[in-house]
Image (tube, rainbow, N blue to C red):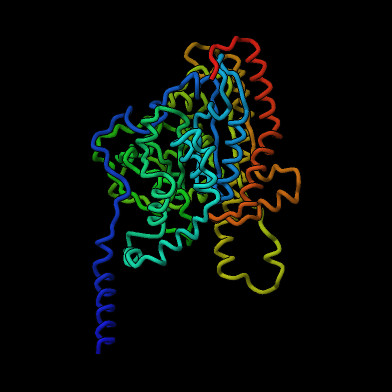
Amino acid sequence: MKKASLWVLVGLIVLLSLIFGGEYVRPTMNAPLPKWNPEYGYRFANLPPSVEHSTDSLFMVASFSGGGARASALSYGVLRELAKTPIVWEGYRKNLADELNIINALSGGSFTAAYYALYHDRIFRDFESRFLRKNWEHELRARILQSPRNWLRLLSPYFGRAHIFAELLDEGLFGGATFNDLVSSSQRPIIFIHASDMATVSRFEFNQRQFDLICSDLSKMPLSVATAASSALPLVLSPISLKNYAGECGLDPPAYLSETKRTSWGRRRANELRSYINADKRPYIHLLDGGLADNMGMRSVLELSALVDDLEATFQILGVKKVRKLVFLMVSAETDPDLSHYELDELPSLTRVLNALVDIPINRYSDDTLELMRQAVVQWQVQLHQRARTEKSVFAPDAEIYFIDASLSELDDPVERGRLMSIPTNLALTDSQVDDLLLAGSKLIRSDKDFQRLVRDLKIEAAKAPIISRR
C-alpha cells in the first residue's frame, strides 16, 4: 500500500508539473527599453578611442567564427599572438591586440570574444583553465540529468537546454556580467555577438542598434544569454526567445532602412531589419546558432556596407575618424567533410543526415563569404585611392586596407590541417587538441602575407615619429 501511495504521489507531481509547469517556468530574457535614445547603450560611439589602447587611425575589425570549442581555441591562439606582437603607433608602445576595435563573433568564437571584452588582458592568464580545458558538455549533461528541478523546468514549452547552458556560463565564466559592464569599461573592442533568426535565417546582432528596433535594453542582458543563443546548435541546444517590444519606446527608425538600395544584398538586409519594427506580426524572435546565417562572422561587414551603400558611410555610422590603416582579420575554424563516413553502401543514419543538413549549407555559405570578402577588399582599396579628398572623409589620404586570413584551411601541412579540421564541433577538447589549436593560431597569423605587410608598414611608421610614452 505504501509503495502504491508513493507511485500515486509521483504521478500526481508529474501531472501537476505538466499542467502548471509550462506557465511557472517562463523566463523573459530581454528587458524593455522605456524611451529610445540614439546615444544610449552598448554602441560603438560609447567606447571612445584611446591612444594607449584602440585608436581610430589603426582600425582593426576581427571575426571569430563558429565551430564549438575548436573555434574558441583557435581564436584565442590568434588573439594571444596579437598580444605578443609589439608595435609603436602614434608614439605609444603597445601590442596589436590593443588595437582591436570590433570583434564580430558567433558560436564558439563568441566565448573568446566576450571574455576578452569583459576582462581584457586577464584572458591570457585564466581563459585556458576556465574555459578551453574544461568539459562544458559534461557540465551541461550533469546539470540536466542530476537535477530533478531541471527535469521539471524542461517540461515547460518556454524553457530549454540553452537556458540551462546560459546559467552554467553565467556561474562558471562570466560571473553575472551584463552588456552594461562592457559599456562601463569604456574600453574597446566592442563585440557584436551573432545569432540566427529562425524566421528569416538572417543575422541577429547583440548590439543596441539592433535592439532599438525591438525597443529592448541590451545593457541589462547577461553575456551568458547572448553567447548561449549564439551557440544554440539545432538538436543540441534549444532556441532562446526574445520578446519584441517594438512600438513602445518612441523609436525613430534610421533612414537607411527606408532608402532605396542599389544592391540585392542591401534590399534584403533592409527588409530583414524592418520586420522587427512590427511587433504585432513578430511578437517574439527565436534565436539559434549564429553559424546558420554566417559561420565566418564577416557577412556583417559586407551587409552593413550594402545597407548604407558604401564603405565610407559604414564608418560614418560608427563615428570613426581619420582611419589610416584598416585591418580585417578573419579567424575561421571551418571543417572539411569526412568522406570516409560515406564509403559504405548502406543508408546514412538519421544523425548523419541531420548533421549534413546543418554542415552542408554552412560550409557552402562560408566559402562564398570568404570569396566575397576578398573581392570587396580589392574594390574598397580602389575606391579609397579614387575618391575625392575632403576634410570630412573618414579615411586619411594615404589609407590602406589589409585582409588577414587565419583560417584552418590555410595551414600548409595537409596532415595537420586534416587533423585539426576533423575535431568535432562540440564543447569538449583534449589538452593536446587545445595545444595544437593554439599553435595553429600562431602559425596562421604569422604566415599570412597581409599580416607580414602590416607589421612591416607599422615598423616604417614607427621610425618616422619619436616615442611619446612607454607602457
